[in-house]
Length: 258
Image 1: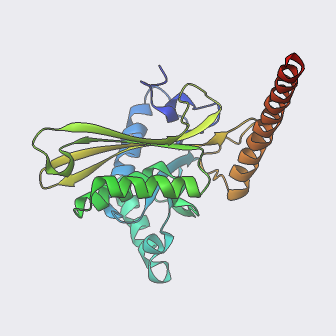
Image 2: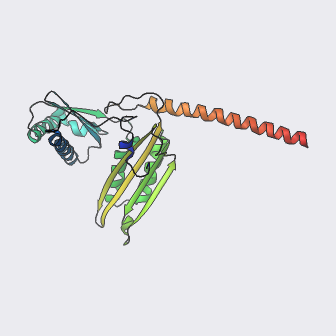
Image 3: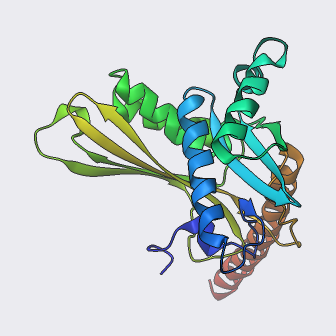
């Protein structure tokens, strides 16, 4: 099932938090769900090149709080914060609510965000850059920034071929069945002149052994990945020491037999 289910939905409540935080009863649940879909669709279309990773929506006592996670906060904020004010007024018209708050969080390492990585590859393919080159550059950048593994799958008329096909690029480890593994996932499309190309991205950021904050606005910093990787390297080092010790004993035994 790890290959079939969405890695993010599979880890909700374990190491991931929900991106919509509100309570809806039987009467207004559907309305709020549709409103969330409209808000996300509007913001993704309105800020097309803003490097948006995810949009977290929270509702508390009639107040709507929208948090935008982006790698390019300057584009969304605009000159003197004027762009944010425009977006806030448009959201008020869209939702019919007067109390709307917009927060913007910067993603400091976009190379480790699956949505941004997939979007960058899609933009490059649309600009007629070779898909293999764009994919390999994304993989190298993610591993350089501390990812334990990355997998990218492209499907469609790759390089304008007449017959659609799928190609997969993988480096490192991406264990989808291990729920404690922090795996980010995204599915984006590149609209080319010869049709759509689907891009799926899986990024493994390491193992989460301690209890994690399920707040959807939690952003794992550089130190967090470093600690996780450091811990794993120490464990692997101990195991290597054990294997080396066994090898020495084995060689010693062979020497005695000789």
